[in-house]
Image (cartoon, rainbow, N blue to C red; front, top):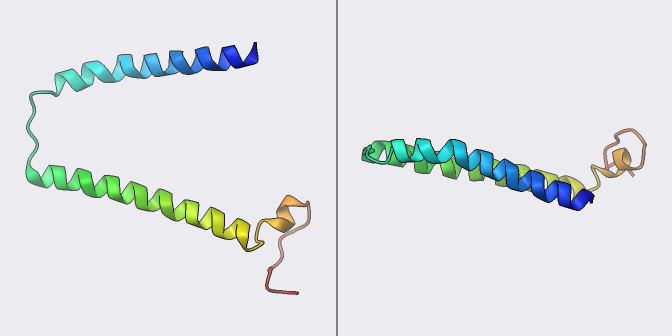
Amino acid sequence: MKRIVVIVGAVVLVAVIAALIIPLWVATAGIELSGFALGMIVMMVIGCFAVGGGLMFLVFYSARHGYDDAVHHGRGWRDPGEG
């Protein structure tokens, strides 16, 4: 039952987002963007991926080098370099 509620909720959420985005997309269909604007959009997308990738790198680095162990096991933070 819980699985069905989650699936229906996800479908409804996607439908609401589509209902809000599609009219905006159609309304802007005739607008031309300059090369500068397209370049800025590309740089923004690359920047977003760089920030997301950097944060994922930090998460995996932290987990693999023991920085999360003390907190995960209920102890306070300690430097993993200290024996």
